[in-house]
Image (tube, rainbow, N blue to C red; front, top):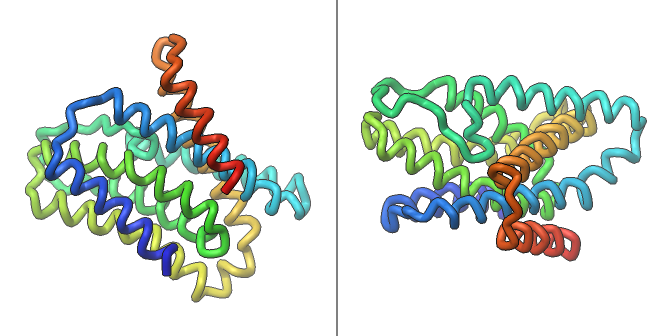
Length: 223
């Protein structure tokens, strides 16, 4: 039940933060992104990756690389929304279908393994919070109608639970669970490392971000 409720609550919380607080501090959001990227990467490396590599390592490695390539393709359409960027036209009034479809594919896939990996679930919901804040900020300040903006966020919130539902009810997913898990690992590796690289703007040393990242790694190790 938590694997269904918490991803939804993470997106709802992001929306409420934007709706009521209208945050202006980019530095705080960047720190949250850095924390989420480090935490997701650490959870993947500490808890998820070792389990999948109990199988044929070359076969697993192939699907991890496919996951990385898949995420690169998805980001071509989402313009990097998965790791904290929305480079779309704010004056557009049409529903952003390409953004929605690419984010939905990403969210459904990440939902498939979290039912059996609660540590991974925490990584996903912490990752979703800053993404939801960035998406809500963009959608609510764009020319898109409020109804379409809220509908977008609502559907986005449901995609990861939908992945959980598919994992629990379709034998096809169970039969290829290892391959799908490796695919998701590739997606997480790409997203989390991209967040960490981009959080270090101009390759400048930032002690606050460094401590934030170390703190995320330590928490992920001990959960």
